[in-house]
Image (cartoon, rainbow, N blue to C red; front, top):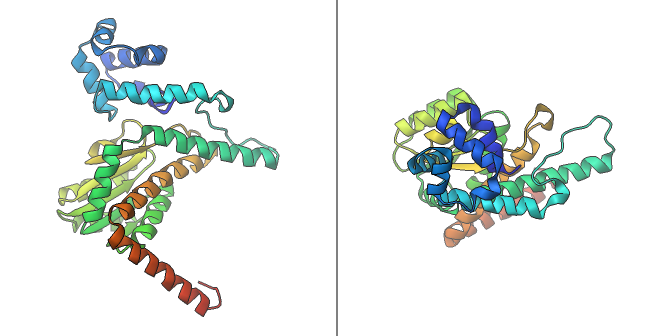
Length: 292
């Protein structure tokens, strides 16, 4: 199942009666939907075209045409990749031989990157890159596994001279968010989009005047709704045994895109700092006999 269809199935209990009817129609025959006009779909479902437009915007699409383009791309990829079952992920199995484990991890990570790439909105990505490039200060928030993603972004940004800090402590998140202002950026990571501490930190940052960005799994969530610019990774990895493996890879994929976009946009400013940080690390590593 594609990330979009998976999100629709997952979010059905949260939907209104009319929205649920629309979601069920899309899930029943997604291949038909991409060829339908908004008026035809509205008449078939007994709803208004405006309801369909609002529904698509709740799912963070620009409208019905944008929704159809993204869905068609996912369906085309699934049809072209029958060997891996479309977008299915392999769970941990007792007694699995090591060669199978290696193959399963590779398949999961590749699928996660592929599914995440299909969800990317280039306009949003560029807006986030522009915000980060001109930010006076950047706060990065994330709890538990999400803090690893935030920390990875911190280590990248600090190398190019961006004034930033990554916080995994909920009290420090709020403390720092309270001191943000216009011209600052708060970047919050939460796979579920429902981590209370991260939601509180982003809410506080917005109240302080900072621009806000979220990175969550695809679908409706509190954090994505709160953010000025929501970014999404694949939402297909489910189940406790997977240990947030493919989802972490998906989020790091977006972090790498943002960082590369920033350096590319301000190449003359950032590359000298990136090269200098590398040279300094190498100098002290060799000075201490390779231990750093």
